[in-house]
Image (cartoon, rainbow, N blue to C red; front, side, top):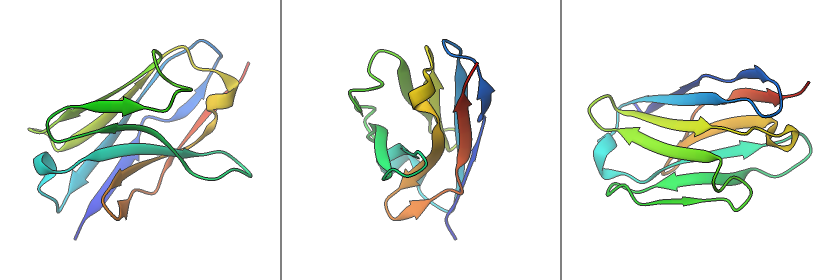
Length: 111
């Protein structure tokens, strides 16, 4: 059974930072492309960042230069370092691997 569990969300002021984690089990973590998505209220879910098994990354234009996706294959864990957070980054953030999704973690950016 594939399980993805996100953590690290919370309330942060504009300009602040958060680090999201996605702990996984039930998959051969190291061979998959993994991704972070987000969904804001009333909006469609959108790709935030993706990382391949080789470590190649791509980002949504709105987060380039502020967010960094990374993976630790030894820990079967995916990360998203988010710096320079803006109110428009407020959303539920989801970890994704193939057709598998986590339950999401809320990120709220507000003063």
